Structures are given as C-alpha cells and as structure tokens.
Amino acid sequence: MRIKRLKLTGFKSFVEPTELHIEAGLTGVVGPNGCGKSNLLEALRWVMGENSPKSMRGGGMEDVIFAGTAQRPSRDFAEVTLLAEHDAHENIPGIIANDDDQELEVVRRIERGAGSAYRANGRDVRAKDIALIFADAATGAHSPALVSQGRIGSIISAKPQERRMMLEEAAGISGLHVRRKDAEQKLRAAETNLNRLSTILGDMD
Ligand code: ATP
Image: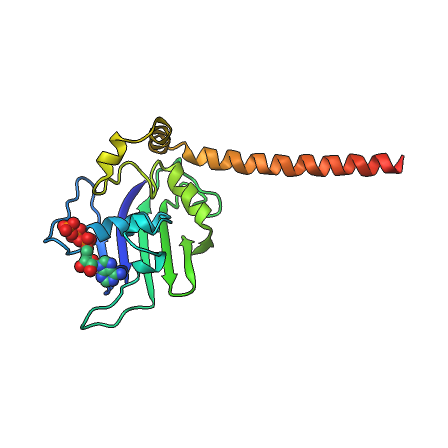
C-alpha cells in the first residue's frame, strides 16, 4: 500500500481544509516548533483507526477537533481522508473487488457528541474493518513505521510480548489474530447450538 494523499479539515491546528500530496520516495515535513508537524502524523494514525486519546495527546477523542483560538471559534467536527494505492494482491472483499480498482479512500469523521465514523471507498464501514484493511497491508495506527517522539525509548524498554506484537504488525499478520478470534467465537456459538439441538433431539426420543 502506498499513501498518496492526506486531507485534513478541522483536525487539531488544521482548521482550514488542507491537502497533502505524498510523492514516491522520501518526504520531509519541516517547520518551526508548534506549527503542526506532529499533528500531521497523528492525523495519519487517527484515520487508520487510532483509538487512544492519550496517544493523540488529548484527554478524550473529541480533543482532535479544532478547539478555537482567540481569533477563531472552535469547530464541531474533524475529518481526515487518506488516499492510497493498493498492491494487486491486497483485494478487500466488498471494498476493493478486483485488480483494476486499486484506489482506497478511507475517511474518518468525528462530530462533537456523536462519536466517529468511517467510510472506505464511499461505503460505511466498522472500525474493525479499517483495522483489518491496514493490518493486512502491514501498516496501521500502531505500525512500527510511524515513529513518534519517545517511541524509540518505549521500543527499547518494551516487554518481549510487546516486541512480538510489533514484529507481527510489521510482518502484516496481526489481522490473522483478529480473524482467528472471530472464527473461534463462531465455532463456540455453533457448538452451543449443536449441544442444544442434541438435547432437544434427546427429549423427543
Ligand atoms: P514541535 O516541533 O515543537 O514538536 P510540531 O510542529 O510537531 O511542534 P504540533 O505538536 O504538531 O507541532 O502542533 C502543536 C500545535 O497544535 C499547538 O499550537 C497546539 O495549540 C495546536 N493544537 C493541538 N490540538 C489542537 C486543537 N484541538 N485545536 C487547535 N489547535 C490545536
């Protein structure tokens, strides 16, 4: 997956709609202290499903919405759009159906008092679907490729279990754990139904 564009509206200090084109190769973001460089990286993590307000440097998720300044009133919503190009083998059932359609557009929007919602290629999707899309592409809100301030120290001091999770995310297999959990739940439900059925059949004998 290659990220091509990021659009921000009302997200933290980016009150006006702002569009960033990310070209192939190395991209650098430079600017004076407090101009919003870290906010950009946070927007990228947020649209990929970040759910911890703490890692967004806020007390609650609504803190990502532009809070206003002395000159400008606050906003009621924040929206981040990510446009990416998919590799041919990364078909996503229901969202990217065939090899010809390789553009993925993910939109996350949060409104005050109403929580946040996601769309992928124009369809309403769940946070879980978004997590799977990015996990399968070996990226996502917790990708080890997104190195924010203090992250190196936390990797060095991480427990073996936490390091293993980072490696699994980098290898693109963390989505398999989610699918395995789902499959196990379905299996348990089917076993319960089978037990109930055999009890009913036993009663009928
Ligand atoms: P540094 O180089 O010091 O790390 P930076 O360029 O990474 O700085 P950020 O930390 O991304 O800057 O941006 C901080 C700015 O974003 C601050 O001016 C802060 O007031 C503003 N900001 C953060 N959240 C909001 C919000 N919800 N509404 C309005 N402004 C916000």
